[in-house]
Length: 349
Image (cartoon, rainbow, N blue to C red):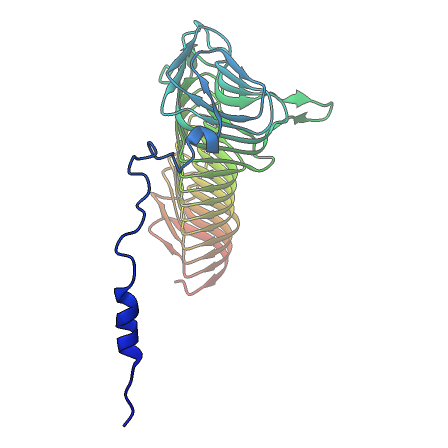
């Protein structure tokens, strides 16, 4: 029978190992060095602590306090590639007659981002759609140039996020809808001109506006209120609410799931409308040039109609008297009262 000598040999070898080892220096080498970069190292930023201030170099800027000017523009952006963080602070003006802008963009700028703050001045509405007073002409606007045929100079690839504008004689947030501009999660109130204008406007509110409340190529999840212009106006308008005195509540090429009211104009006016409700005190409640699907139109005028569409499907009209629905083709539609003026009717009494 063989004897296994492996374990004894291991034990013998272990017994002859040195009993102590060198321990090295016991004094600590000092405080540990930082292992993470600071915000200034990751994104060098320039503070703005007074106004007027002009940004002439590309980069990131931030407010360190509230800013107030007595005339003209508070902040001018005069170069491409600028990020401006308002830091939750307010830009204000005490100009006796409205002039200048909270943030002014020189002509044809690119790659801009402005976010997180307030622009405030003292323009008021007398209650009849006449605006006047102290402060800024505009909240955020750009320098346009007339080239002999049209105005140019609008910003490109510009975004405004989380900015509130109050009390301006001209426009609230105006980036033009001609190119890649976006305004989101912003508000504008008591604006003599247009409240918010951009190519894409999302989840914004513009109230008490003299002209258009909200205008864009694509407008979604917004509320607009105007005196003379369309409260919400766009090529594609979805999930919006608009109310106007003399303008349209909702104006769109394609409107979906919208609610529009007007005192003296269309409640909703669109080429195609789906799941929309339009109400007008003295004019057509809902007007769809091509197609209205699952819509409702209401008019308080005996000389106007509740709903007009070239083709109407599963729609409802509410009127006191007069014409309820006028359409070339109507399918499955209903009028609460009044009479219908329909050329071809299907699934209707």
